[in-house]
Length: 115
Image 1: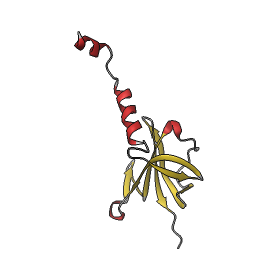
Image 2 (image 1 turned 180 degrees about the vertical axis):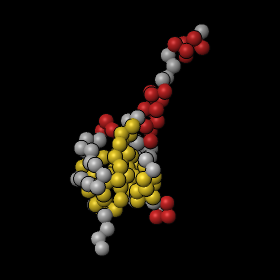
Image 3 (image 1 turned 120 degrees about the vertical axis):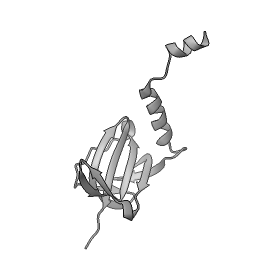
Image 4 (image 1 turned 45 degrees about the horizontal axis):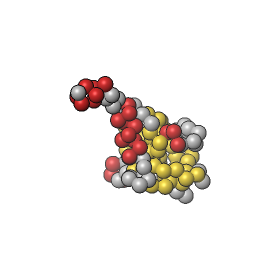
């Protein structure tokens, strides 16, 4: 009887994934407050080591210093195309890639340096 109940109401893959996203991007669990263009969001910041800062996207290598992960439903900033500037926690970066997939907005950034 209990087995039949479980089969009639299984968690879908999408709902399990959303549950994981809610944990991963939760301030109390793993997230942190991120200031993006003077708005505060909860997300996860990945700082890449300088030795491994190049990533291949569609067989093109981009230098990446920082990756942001944010909940798409709570992130209201308009998408920026590669090459545009984005200010994160007081530092200006260039956008290398920006996409949303399975409820997570991922932004890959390169720090702007003056020569």
